[in-house]
Amino acid sequence: MGILKNIIIEREVKEMTELERILKPLMEIADDETFCTTEYEAIKEYIEEKDFINVTTEDWQEIAARGYDVGWLIECYVPYLPKEKKLNMAKQIWDELGDIPIIEIDFDLVIDANFRCWSKGSVVIGIWQDIEHWFGVSVAVDLMNM
Image (cartoon, rainbow, N blue to C red; front, top):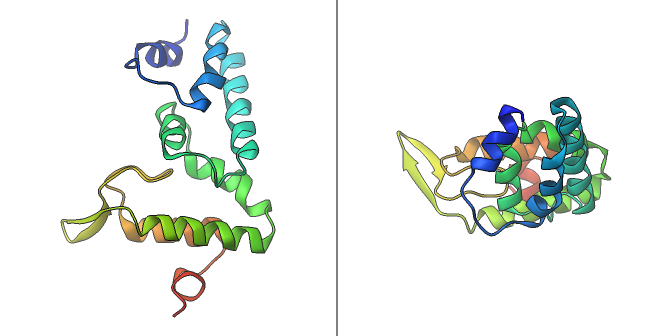
């Protein structure tokens, strides 16, 4: 069995998310290359089925824990959405971000909890830049109405 599968199996037992339930049967795939390709396709399909915006923070954290570059996965999906839909998604994420506790660490404002695809400790300005980049919006103009 591959190293990646061993790491996943050794993870602490907890209540499984919807994504984890979908991915669990893939653990039976013996060939590492087939496993990785199948897992990637399943994650990509899950993101599409959830219409991106409905992927939970727990699922984003699970995707990252499995070694996937979440930003890259987002960039494979979001740019192809209609402009209005991207703006609405950005607004929803921006509104939700307002409910996340923020603290100052070494002169940076960081989130004090996992939020969607960003881990606890992510710098707020970096999150703003991700939103602008991924959704093609301006935080100041489109989301803050400045």
